[in-house]
Length: 603
Image 1 (cartoon, rainbow, N blue to C red):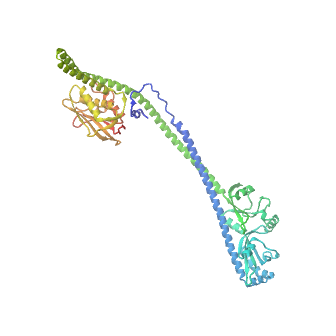
Image 2: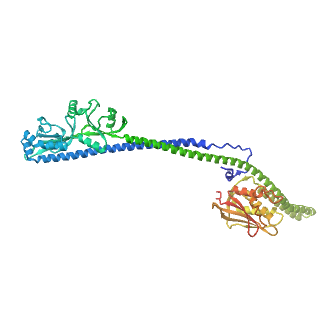
Image 3: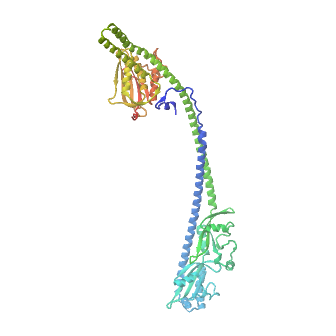
């Protein structure tokens, strides 16, 4: 805060000690750069971290959506194939030759009549199983393996079909370790249920279709407790597949779309996937994102799991490039912002240094100004001494004359009493005049309080008339309502007295001085205020010197000090106002002090 701003505070001492210590200015850049750099680093780190986790979230969301798509597509394909098998079974029950052979429980007739149909279904629709079972669930004919028959079929689908007497479908684990979609339906006739016919398809082709449609690799794992090792090995040999029973502890692979399972797929990875998590594996330059779907049979019991593997190598490289690009751009932006902030702070520091130096200079100037103010006050008081002596001389001469008259009439007590009363009145007038002068000359502190401007004007005019040798008419033009401002009345009287003295010196002959007070907005800010003006009827101020009248020590009179108007300007600035001067068209000069409108202090 500058010295000028501090000066407008109430009760601010005008006299400043010359030995005030000025502290060194703070280093703005050192105070702000490191905290700002730390905050900027934190913001950039938070931005990069947020970008990273958003990318991870998008990546995980894409895998979740892909897993959901796998489950939905598989259900759709199973439903489609189930409906197709239902239709075939219904159509087959309507073929008389097959229906008669099944009613007669004739194996040869069934092989002869249903065999061609089964071959067509196997070659064109991937049907891999067709059973004819009697009422006791004993197998009558296996068209996919005619040499095997007579065994009891107690799979979940057949048991439910017999107990519920309706068509049942579901996934079941075959004897060779294959996962098969089975549809079992009762064969009804007029006497009742002749038996049960079962048709199924291994779902290996569904795995390949999903792999082609959704661009994901699938790995089908079966629980070892549901698949004995000899049957699994027999299925490997028959289907000419490769695998390892000991690769995983709890499960064994029965189908896959990849040529080789990544080595990184371990029991710990499967355990994490089994509880609903996801994992990312990198191997031989390939990055895989893994999730898992459970596989259940017709009874809703868990058979095993299907691992969904999505190749995100390209996505991962793009993701890493994006993160690197974002980080690099963030660093560049951060460095740019930090550089701008550095240069801005450098400019602020230079301005702050200049302001500090200006404060130092203002402090010295304020000290000098206080000294000049004191000199001007003494000079003004010196000027006023002559006027005061003139004012006191008349009553004192009267006092001496009255005392002499009292001495001549010692025997007349009444007259003596009258003379003493007049002497006392003259003494009281001198005392009141001296007290008024002492109050007027007290200009040591800026003490603002609620001030009646009419009273300030009247007291100053009274003092002016008492101290001026010649009589000059002073006209006062005040508003009808009282004007109360927060101001220092002593300083205002002092400033107004200086303006009246200047006006009196400029006025010649029978001219008069006009004091005016009227409301007026600040010409630049529009702030409401009051203009206290003093107009004389002199010759005016020469245009070449009118801009110099407020310069300290500038004067056109030999006996002048050149400090009266600078003091007026200083008083105006202390009240957050200003002083102006202009020559009037009708002749003479007007000095005006603008003071802001302030609320009176509470009583």
